[in-house]
Image (cartoon, rainbow, N blue to C red; front, top):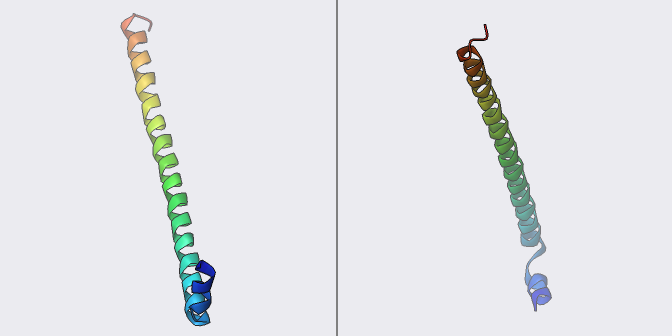
Length: 68
C-alpha cells in the first residue's frame, strides 16, 4: 500500500520531499550536537566555579585553626 502511494507521487515532488527530509535531519542533528556542547560547557563551568569555593573554605578552616 505504501509503495503504491510512493509511485503516485511525481518525481519532482518526491525529490523535494527527500531534500526537505535531509535538510530537517541535518538541522535536528546540529541542534542535538549544539545542545550536547552547551550541556558540556555548562557542567564544566559549574565544576570550575565550585572548586575555588571549596579551596576557599579549606583555606578559611586552615587559617581559623591558627596555622599561619
